[in-house]
Image 1: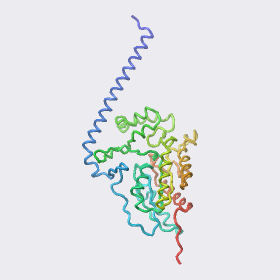
Image 2: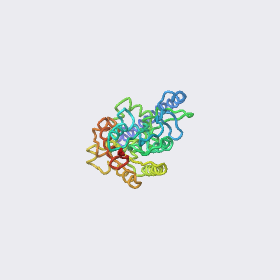
Image 3: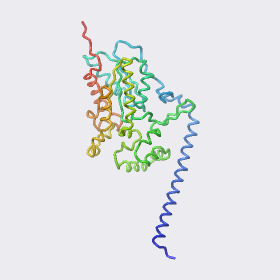
Image 4: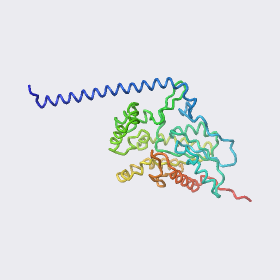
Length: 345
């Protein structure tokens, strides 16, 4: 009996459905294998993980550096404590070291002591907790926050703690809360799937698929680390955190300032041409919050460019660090956040 068009269509749909179902089953089996392998690895590695790691478990911060900054007792120099993430860590010419060198060469300013407490992967929440737990005992007279647009989370890195031992392989893997904040259900699955992350690392196919998906809008809307900076609801916690930090300053007699480093993708000409107000929305929100709290605020976006970043569009290259340090030093002087040198008689 000849096939009618409706029967052919039903057969095609049935075939597609069967193929899709088979694909889902295979994906589920493979993903389950990756999850089981991770669980086994956690059990076997956790007891010896922190012996050689640069970080250790902290019940309030999840992790902290094994070695805290070595600082002597408070002397006569004006003491500055800088909070931040990997934007202020790194080589000897890191951002804080450059600002330190500039202001201590200025003959009109008093000598200052700079303490860099930046911890890679920290969020603004963790920096606040770090200040309360380890920063206040340093008796700072000025506290600076170098804000990255991926700081709008409570925790960003999905680290695993087993029996008080830290498994640091979760660096670069967003927490479920961060992953779920991105646009699109497919993106949520891709961010949380161990198999898809492995596939992305091993082949270019997954990376191209993500690029095609993200091309429907701005890439930062689809990134687990940065997407929250463009969502109004998440800024309430930043306001609360900076309110608490300002209160600590009043109670412990230190001044406070915040400098925000842009995300390199914010300089894309196609993004700016389409909707520059949306692209620069996080800085506008942050500036408004700081103005309301009376916290001196420096937006570094006008002073940097797309050529100031390394390939990840997050961290500053040498030129970016130079420009940012010069502007921060100028800002501190203009805002009178550093004491003037006293004339010798």
